[in-house]
Amino acid sequence: MSTNPDYIEVLEARESALSEIREAASRLARRFPLRYWLECDKEEKYPWDFVNTFADAGWLGILLPKAYGGMNLGLTEAAIMLSEIARSGAGMSGASDIHFYVFPPQPIVRHGSEDLKRRILPEMAKGKLLMAFGVTEPTAGVDTSRIRTKAERRGDRWVINGQKVWTTNAQNAKKILLLARTSPRDEARPLDGMTLFVADLDRKHCDVRIIDKLGRAPVDSNEVFIDGLEVADQDVVGEVGRGFYYLVDGLNPERVVVATEGIGIGRAALDLATGYAIRA
Image (cartoon, rainbow, N blue to C red):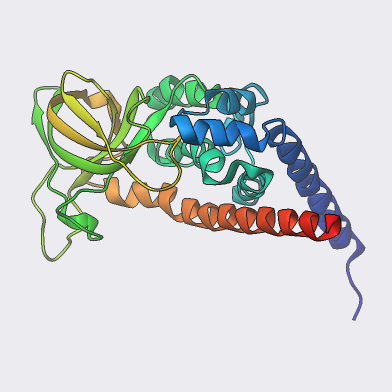
């Protein structure tokens, strides 16, 4: 059986490009030694220097279209970048703060209006806008269809009330990608009737309380209590009532990348163990 030489050439070019991403991400991440991450962990300090370094190099827009300041690359490239970040010694404290620029915007990329894309995506690509992710609720468990946060329409605006938990980045974020019910839960179609909003994390209407946790101390996790938060029609992502389905466009690829970040941590452990063995 003969092999198409053009196909082999494409594969070799692809592997070469991925190797370049792997090396570039590793080189950038390793500018930050283990003592930097130890300091961030001890002080529970958000690693802005690290984030800004990747922003300046353009990596935060790895999945974003070029029209919005991105690289227009794919999931494989993003997974390699984040795995190398974790492997550098940054672990989840480094990988997590980068991937929250990469994956929460995906519902906006795929389903947001052109106006919303142009207002939000370039700022995220430059690292100028940090967005929290508001989905999980304490009373819903793993069944997202049972969330109770409610958005009610009043004229050309929505008023949101409810509670979120394990909301990452809420101590520092200016915006929150927020899932809320806009119609009652229907047992026949329980995932309908939820809507995604890009809302201001307005401290007048959002009480943000940090959660003490073990691990990933530099990247905050929070409870968020929402009381009368107003959101304009123009900040709705896609169609009203279809928010859960849009959300999956960010959550599914994110699961792949979380796994590769874990692999990066495992490789970091093996790298260190090999170094100790050689010195011994």
